[in-house]
Image 1 (tube, rainbow, N blue to C red):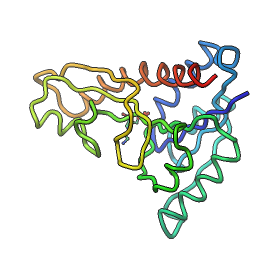
Image 2 (tube, protein in one colour):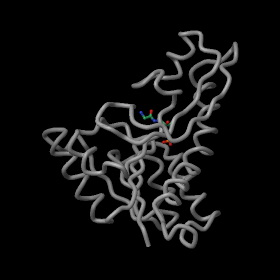
Image 3 (tube, rainbow, N blue to C red):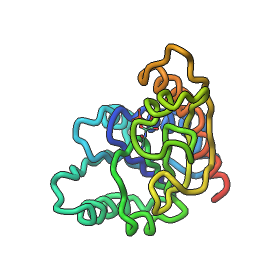
Length: 194
Ligand code: GAR
C-alpha cells in the first residue's frame, strides 16, 4: 500500500474531501494508496478531529516549539517519513517551507492555493482579488517548488466574483471548488505514478 501524508493547519476541509474521495473511489484498490497520516502544526486544528474519527494516524508538531524554521522542518520531515509517503499533500498548511524540505519531497509534494496562480500568491487572496476588481477568482493545485506558490500547475477551478461579494463569500465559493479539484488532482497523480 502506498501512503499519502496530509499536512493541515486548520479546518481541514480539503483533507476531508481527499479522505472521502479515497473511500468513495476505492483508492486502495485502484491506486494501492491510502491516507495514512494527517499532521498539523496546530493542536487545535479542527481537521484533526475528523482524521481521528476516520481512524487515520494524527500528529501535532507545534512550530513555536522549534528554534528555527530549519529545526521545525527537520522534525516535520521525520514525522512524515515515518510513513514512507508516496505523496505529501499540503491542505491549508500555513507554513513557509525551507528549500531543504521542498527538495526532500521534490516531485511528490502538492499544494492547493486559493487563487488562480500565478495571480495572487501569498496571503489574503480573496480580498486582493476583490480589491483588484477581478471578475473571476479560483483555486490552483500545483507541485511545490522552492518559490512560494509557484511550481507546475496541475489543476485549476474558476468561479465568478459577484458584485456583492465580501472576502468570506468569495472564499466559500472557491472552497467548494477546491473540494472537487484537489481529490481529482491527487487521484491523477496516483494514477500517473502507479
Ligand atoms: C483553503 O482555501 C486553501 O486553499 C488555503 O487555506 C484553506 C484551507 O482550508 N490554503 C492557503 O491559503 C495556502 N497558502 P481547509 O483547511 O478547510 O482545507
